[in-house]
Image 1 (tube, rainbow, N blue to C red):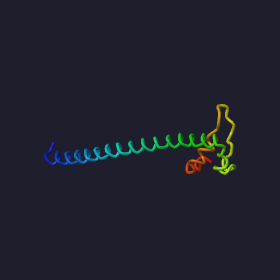
Image 2: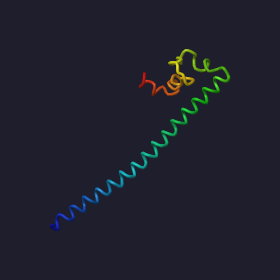
Image 3: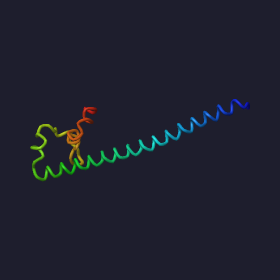
Image 4: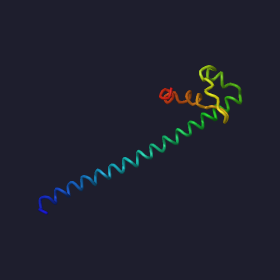
Length: 98
């Protein structure tokens, strides 16, 4: 190998190592943000259920939600269909699935 090629390859290797280190750091940051956002989403869904449960217990669910704003949704055999409530709580998501 010539002496001119070695410094060139060393420069490329250094550049690629720096790029890899930056990519690994960015991936670690993105994973932390993704994990935090996913955890927040689950927390919001749980809090929505707890709010619904309390509103139903005090018989003020319809008054607070405007009654007809939340359709019943399709009948389910396993209990209550929470899809309409989640569409109310997450309006930005419901636009994508309507």
